[in-house]
Amino acid sequence: MKENLQAQINAWSRDNDPLGCVDALRQIGRMVDVQDLSAVMGISSKQVYALACRGAIPHYRIGRAVRFDPTEIAEWLRAHSCGRRA
Image (cartoon, rainbow, N blue to C red; front, top):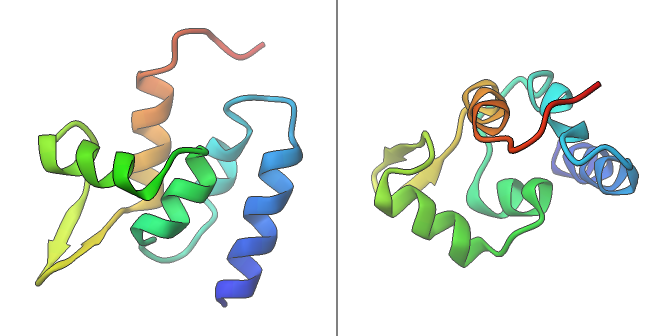
């Protein structure tokens, strides 16, 4: 399952649309971890942890683990986009 997600991430990174991963995020049927989200968003894991720690990005804590709902992240990315998709 992790390999399939990595293949999707690689495909998104080749997309010219900066928000190209948003629609694909909604198709993931499970919570994602920091590493997955950092790969999708193109930022470091440290930056994802910092966003979660500040409460700037929707997340869930399960014990010490931090998980993200892909649908909520997609909505958050759209809401925080500086431009609009055509």
